[in-house]
Image (cartoon, rainbow, N blue to C red; front, side):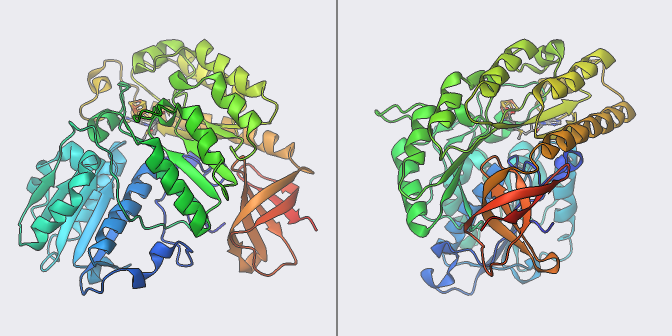
Length: 479
Ligand code: SAM
Ligand code: SF4
């Protein structure tokens, strides 16, 4: 199935469990109906930029904001880096492979960078800092995501002839607010509500690369939502590394659940999603809100990382297997049937066969609808890096394969049970060769379906499921 913008943790059925490690970043969708995709709104200029994004949904959305900043300054967006004056990579460093990929891309410019500005943004920029200039002296801009508020000023310096500029402050309580955000997904609008992370999971670079937790003011979030609804968006996805630790810093002091309800209440909004929730901040109020408010989607992504309490403790995840399962029981007791997805790391230092068995048994106990699974990758500035008892690489690979096959069987069985059910989908894709349309259910399942109608993109349709596979469903539109 062609995936126009099938990105991020939210992809329930689109990404088979086996391929989660290298999810593609969003592609610009040409028929976006966001008014911001119209070049006519911006001052004409002969300068152009190319921006490529690696990694998670937060990076994808940061890139939409960076593009907004550049468009506002008169830059044109181009699809081919060879034709760009400014070539930017918004990078990921969550696993070693992601970081290597960026350096490979930078290597392409070694002899071709004359007349261009090459910049590195995001997590790898924050992690490597000045080191990037050493490894790739043709780079002139290095800026971590916690410093994006300084981007306009950094671009000014480069335009004024600056040779090398850097933004690497982590010590900030500010969030990246922009007047203009380019919207690359015409059907689902992403909104960051909280940046950074205050946890300190032993394997994770995020607290180092994205800085401390900072929540946005509820009023500016709701103003954005109202604006998006005016532009025709009906689906909003709220983003944060620990989205459910949101706490409104304004005197209104909205909680995460208050905010969910307020966003769902905005006229024109039919679907509200949120990712990623941390189990520690996951409470019954979230499930109750989903039960009570139909616009809150019936899907929760709740990363568990491991099914073994000793491994969770070593990972510093702040909950045990039993505590996690108690939260799952709240979801299972809900009136609505809520789909569940998760993230799992295999081969964390010290993970024994029996710990891995506990993870496999957790898959069965929970019955996830999708799992993003990763081999543990040692990262700089993390405490796990120096832990003893590393699991050999071959063992990690074999555990990953076992886990993914087990999860595939679970998905086959769960999806089979949906045959004969009816779902409302938001149509976001078309496959002319197969005469099929594709849409997502509120639970974030993909259904490829046939219909006698001509153009359904962006519309809601009622579909009956006729067949199922491990990663998607097939159906027919109901009259
Ligand atoms: N904030 C989210 C949470 O608490 O679950 C996760 C954010 S992280 C960008 C996305 C996923 O990458 C994590 O859930 C974890 O499974 C995976 N990950 C993070 N660091 C990793 C590492 N060093 N090796 C392998 N996978 C890692
Ligand atoms: Fe990383 Fe843990 Fe923070 Fe998630 S909660 S971003 S895994 S440190």
